[in-house]
Image (spheres, one colour):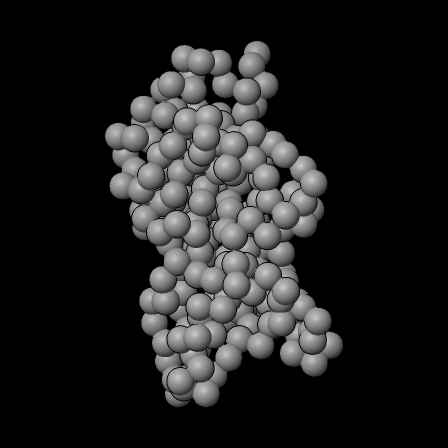
Length: 206
């Protein structure tokens, strides 16, 4: 049996073809693009099967479905500033920084924003500054670090003892699970948590 993420040429071609036929974003399997995404800020290097830069939530769902179908894992990637190899992997690289980097909504009164995972911290704060708001996480890589990567790593920074970590500023997340279902993750009271846990789908068993 072929090890996971070491697809034989026929299977790899089928994965690439399905992605190109079903994804609106960029699908790149050329050696150059794979090499570009084989490193982050760590000392590690892992060549991925290919790289997809999704343009929408629907693209992300389709990628998860197709990778599950073809037996390939997924590594989500933001700015590639991870120092322990978190942004690299042998499966498909899902690069959110290229297209899914927008500020979707800002509620000045509620002091909340809704962003796509590829939005860079400094860009977000530049948009918030005219309103007297800021996401006060003092990262050395703030000019490149994306919000999605910060959430994945629970990034902090030099002033975290005062301002806390990324998790302290997250109200809710829309997440695509391994079975390609989309769920909203948020704080639940005990009754709501109990109701969720009774479901027989992936969200209920997580």
